[in-house]
Image 1 (cartoon, protein in one colour):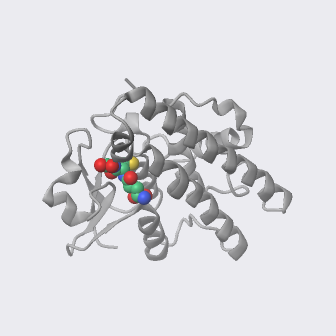
Image 2: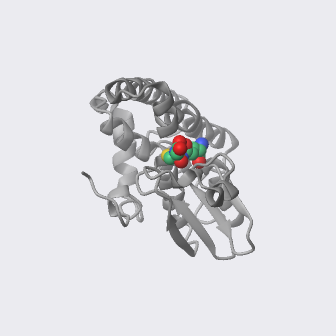
Image 3: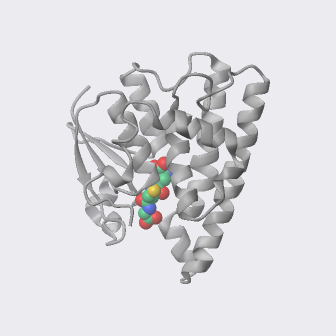
Length: 218
Ligand SMILES: N[C@@H](CCC(=O)N[C@@H](CS)C(=O)NCC(=O)O)C(=O)O
């Protein structure tokens, strides 16, 4: 695979998913920060990488650029198949995608910086809104993990059975986000078990926001 450039923001959960997948798959890449607080995502340079003006974006050596973390992960999976991030079994793949979309479609968009600013200029209003959708989404994720176990899809410790999948790469950053919004995540024991298992895998810690240049837990 050709060398690529990864555009990200250190605390962006969508960037985190891709940063982690690039490391797992051993894809050689350069890293460029896009400062969301300073508004760099809205520059013409960045909009040429992603017309929606968001991170992450992956730019290939030949100049083509790809945005949307789900599209990037699936492209990585198809071009660098090992180690696999999607199960071989079609039903388990579908379950993986269902878990991915709970986070990607129903939780993260509701806490995105531009959405929160449009919702209200008041930070407490923004935080309550984001917390609500994190609770809702993680509650659904928890329930689905129970269904997956009941239908024989493996009893953890990961989201899907005994292997790290794309679902975990979406879950871990979302649990981090939920904690930031002071959601009581102890209500979601299956989620926490999957998070712990995923965090114990190689590359997990290096991908975390606090381990990026410019990152801190402050
Ligand atoms: N569905 C997109 C979400 C991308 C996204 O919302 N990124 C956020 C950071 S996590 C962003 O760039 N926000 C900047 C803004 O809203 O202006 C993906 O998975 O890549």
